[in-house]
Image (cartoon, helix red, strand yellow):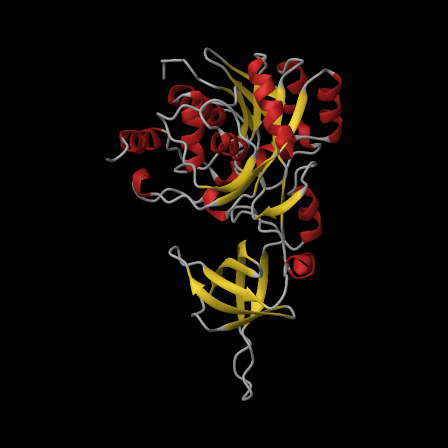
Length: 357
């Protein structure tokens, strides 16, 4: 039976639609990172802050949960093999998505290549061994490609960022300061606002922190082009350690607030929730959080300003309520807030138990 919430989500997405002037799309991150703006969205008011104000907005005992996934240099310019007659050798842009099994990667190719065709990524040979439903290709390599990505690849920045040629700068700037586990093809961008000094300040005031891993896939940011009910979420790998699960469950049992840093953290926590507690473990998640879904684990959410028509906009509407999100985005558009991956942030309160919009 169709989920009625998905039909409602189409209407929510239409009501939350907005037009953003191109100049409001952030092309560089704030420097220092925590000098970005921070909009605090509560049940009854919206208040402007800067991100470095976060210690005044959190309480001792709050638990920050970060996504510690690290972005890999997943964009590689490959070439077709050259025939004995001297033909071939043309360029193919490869966007690696994830390693599906040992030495087999899913990837988008531009232009596409048929099954059985070869590619060379630097000195590394790959064969197209399959085609997935969304058009991605499966590439089989002769050895482990991961140790060579830093040499042959570039960071896969979003298409709305004019990256230029300075890949070395982006390799530092398009990572969170706590990134640890390689595997994402897009940054968990809410965490880009944190600095080591800010983390130290939060530690000193008694804010706890722990980490999950969700390797962000390209599908996370893919706009919804038809009905919400027909939108397919790509599988993303997540890991919740025993220590993290215990920290979250202990905070909840003691009535302390759980603060998710980013929508990827929300999706991880909700995927690991078994109805009574967060369970340690790992797996693939396709969780799709839409209005009508109760977000059960985090009490607060730090997140950036998202694309119209995106699954992430539906997630924040489910988390905070449609009316609050519409008011927040209206305020951001009317103000001087910068949008998307390198833009400003919001601190949202979970509307859990609130029956208003």
